Length: 104
Image 1 (cartoon, helix red, strand yellow):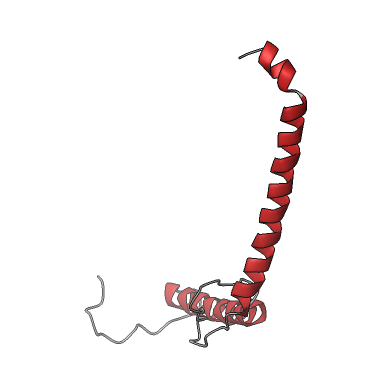
Image 2 (spheres, rainbow, N blue to C red):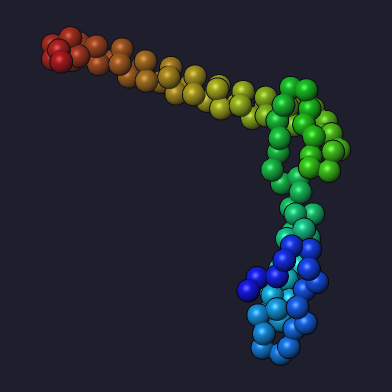
């Protein structure tokens, strides 16, 4: 029969389910510590971009330098795409007669 709520845990003997639960708890506790260490080592690799700044898990706020970097990177992409669009318009203009004679 199940123990009533608030009752003291049963005394565990070797090979009993309570011992395996204790081992599982110890294994999970060590895994939590391992993951917390991994979180500390990788913190900051993922950049949070926000106009007003972003705050990390521990509550420290990041500066807006990430926004300026993102603006430069996105601006470079936009200029590159604009140049590519201009090239495609030159190709279309050069083949305008062919396109006019073969309508879709």
